[in-house]
Length: 333
Image (cartoon, rainbow, N blue to C red; front, top):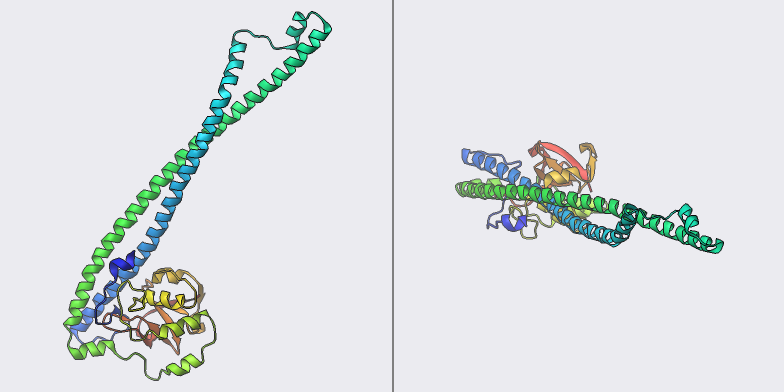
C-alpha cells in the first residue's frame, strides 16, 4: 500500500543523504532536505507496519465478536429449552405439591403401591435435580457468553479506532513526504552539472575490488544477500521502492534478502530490531548495518569497512565507506 503511494521514479537516481561531502550551499541544502526525506520515508514504513498490525488486530477482534455471539446464541437456546421444566417444578412447589417419601407412605394403599410410588419419586427427584443443575449451568454459561461477546465487541471497537488513528497519521506523513520530495528534486535541479556529478560520485570506493570480494564470500544468507545486492549497483534511489527498477535504503535490503528466501521488515528501524545484534568488529559481508542515532538509514556490509546502500537523492546504489556517516549498529539475519 505504502509503496504505491510513495514510489516516484525520476530519471535521476535518488536516495537519502548519508555521506555526501557538500561543497556549496546548494549541496548543503540538498543534503539536509534529502536527510529529512529519508527520515520521513522510514517513518512512513514504520507507520505502514503499525497499520498492518492494527488492521490484523481489528480483523481478529471482529472475528471474535462473531464467535462469541454464536456461543451466546447457543447458551440462550439451551436456557430456553430447560426453562419450561424448571418453571414447572417451581410452580408445583409454590402450589404445595408433595414429592417426598412421607407423603408417599400416607397415600399408599398397599406395600407394593408404596414401593412403586417411592421408586417413581426417586426418578422424578433425580430428573428434577438434573434439570435444575442443567438450568443453573446454562444460566452461568449464558452470562459468561454475554460478557465475552460484550468484551469482544469493545475490543473490536478499540482496534478499529486505533487503526483509524494510524491510518490518518500515515496519510499525513505521505503528504509531508510529497512536499519534501518536491523540494529535494528542485534543489537537485538547481545544482550545476559538475555538482550533480560530484554528488553521484563513484559506484565503488578507491581500492575496492568487487571480483575479490565476491570470490571471498563465505556461503550463507548474508553473503548471498550481498551478492544479490551488488548486482543492483547503479540503480536509482526511488522513495518507497523495493526494486527492481529503484530502491530506497531499506527497500534495497528487503530486496537483497528476498533473493535468498528471507523476508525482512520493511523499515530500517524495524530491521534494527530483528535478527541478531552484531558488534562492529565482528561484521561479516551481508550483515545489515544501520546509521544515524534514529537508525533511519540502512545498508549491507560489503567488507573492508564499506557498505552497499541506496545512498541519497541524485546518487545511485553504490558501495561507500561507512566512515562517511554515523554508525548506529548491525544485525545478522
